[in-house]
Length: 186
Image 1 (tube, rainbow, N blue to C red):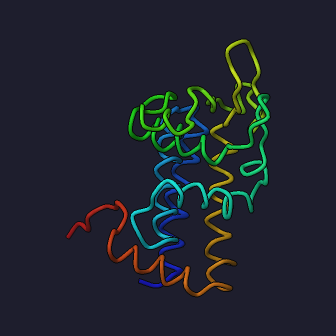
Image 2: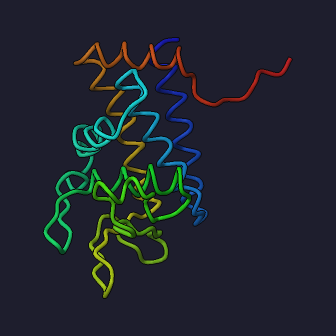
């Protein structure tokens, strides 16, 4: 499989996710979370751990918007990559909730540190939400999925060009763990 084919496939999937965002569908956040997890594994060519996930947010997603790395909660903590792991990956994907699982809570995951919204309903992406009982950041479906589209393009048009080992990692992971797709119909 050529790297351009992998780019096209992933670009098509993120465009589908963006369609969910425009419908006001909450499933977009589950899809974005799983999509990030696949990108983490592909760029590392391995079953990624929590450190790999957090480093991916700091090193890659922050290329699109530095706030993914530098966002500061009202409490003064700057741990959005950690909260993304605990809430988006462990919470939404494994617990179907904005409350992280018990293992994540033990290592710093905070319930509702990320809140979900849509731009069309007045949400502002990566905006602090500080109401009584909340020290949160808002993720909007439209902006989050747009950022992931930009990230896919950046990985495949810039990063793999300057770092051939990332291209090899992506190709190897694709071979070992091909993503979901339709079966060909005869």
